[in-house]
View 1: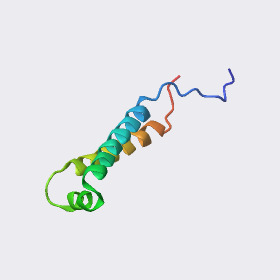
View 2: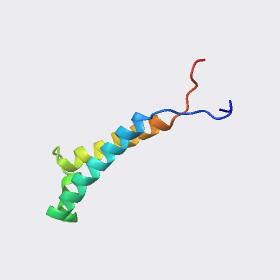
View 3: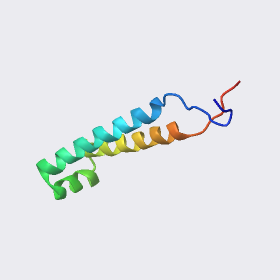
View 4: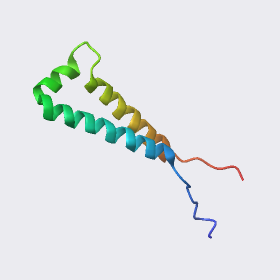
Length: 77
């Protein structure tokens, strides 16, 4: 192999981040189908801890994990 090509290896941060985003989207889509957009919006802005707020937290954590997986780092040789 060329010394210019750097193999990244298995990136489990990105895989976990995508998994969290997929799970959060499944919950939000399910809630939208069951309750409708008006109720889901109300659930997002009220003062209680709801499924929708947990799903938004899961999206944020998933995006953070994907960004963490794509950061560049130098391996020690």
